[in-house]
Image (tube, rainbow, N blue to C red; front, side, top):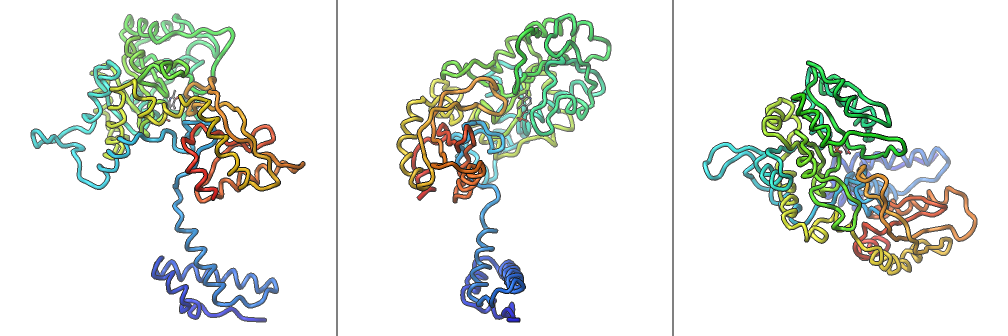
Amino acid sequence: MPRPPSVDAVLRDAAVQVAIARFGRQAATAAVRRAMEEVREALKDGGGVLPVGAIAARALALLERAQVPSLRPVLNLTGTVLHTNLGRALLAEPAIAAATAAMGAAATLEYDVATGGRGERDDHVRGLLCELTGAEDALAVNNNAAAVLLALAALAGGRQSVVSRGELIEIGGAFRMPAIMAAAGTELVEVGTTNRTHARDYQDAIGPRTALLMKVHTSNYRIEGFTAEVSTRALAGIGRAAGVPVLDDLGSGTLVDLTRFGLPAERTAADAVKDGADIITFSGDKLLGGPQAGFIIGRRDLVRACARHPMKRALRLDKIRLAALEATLKLYRHPDRLGTTLPTLRLLSRPTDAIRALAEAVQPAVAAWAGADWIVEVVMCRSQIGSGALPVETLASAGLALRPAAKAPGSALDAMAARLRGLAVPVIGSIHDGAVRLDLRCLEAAEPLLAVLA
Ligand SMILES: *Cc1c(COP(=O)(O)O)cnc(C)c1O
């Protein structure tokens, strides 16, 4: 039986010496050992002796593969703009610049330059949030799940929170309203039925242990038909009469009227303030288009109570995200420009004709890359907003459909989707109607796709 070369012999190889310089001796030695293992396996199967050069090449390939970042950019051609698994909102240029500047420098995170004394980290966004929503006070935390958790713990811990049965949402993963309430230490009091909840249901549930009346945006589903719900405005009236604050979880939340961008209407945070909600929570990286964050805005005494709660420290934002957030919020001072300055709204409001024209422009390159066994056609399709924002509405879009030219097993589509994901910058599409579909809404220019196919 032929014997593989020694580890030392491989480590002396010129190519491996280069690998050692590049990746470090420890990693290179481990890779050589692994490559040798594979050689031994191959020998057991009756293969011949692999020369040192082949082992070195295999070790180098292993080292290079380990070097690819785990978290890396992809082309999101799924048609879902705010794709939670792909990181939701893309940041605007000023937000990227502000975050980058904050990353490599000491910053005024909790420092007041005017006095030289201690500052507060929420000061960087409080004024902007109040200005943009009309709220008295505001703070920011890790995400909206954290905002809801903190508000419930601070305002209703050890007491009861009243919620409609039609609003006990699950937002994927572990965010289920009853579980969040349990974690916050508030007792859930369900009222009404799945499809209908009335004012008297809330009124009848109010007692000495009631701390909050809660309204939850049914972000990712819609109840239709014989339905009734109590609006935030009406609930605020009930709360005021009983002396119980009303919490409105907007979910995505938005700071502008989306209809001005040709999008379906969504209640703004300012609407919730006007409707009389005492405390309001919403996300930073859904329709708002900023970094992952969650906000608690509303009545000063209630926001202060949330800020003082020990959990606030565990849920707070770092300087990088706060810098990005401040820059993102500042863009909202020019709402007319958001359609160009804020990537989320720019992508959501892209004209279908422009997307279609791009699909036609890249079709030949994609067809050439896919090969003769595939037919690549320009198709009209519908994009989703994503992240549970406006779940029912879709947006007219365009893209490419890749279909096998001849009858092929269903696995051919999976194989094509995998081939696209295997590109240097993974291209993420979806499978629909016997085709791999690339919705081009989130591809703003041909270049990134053409570059990765080349
Ligand atoms: C998305 C959502 C949340 C959670 O927000 P994250 O920012 O993802 O933590 C909470 N409530 C509602 C109604 C939502 O839509």
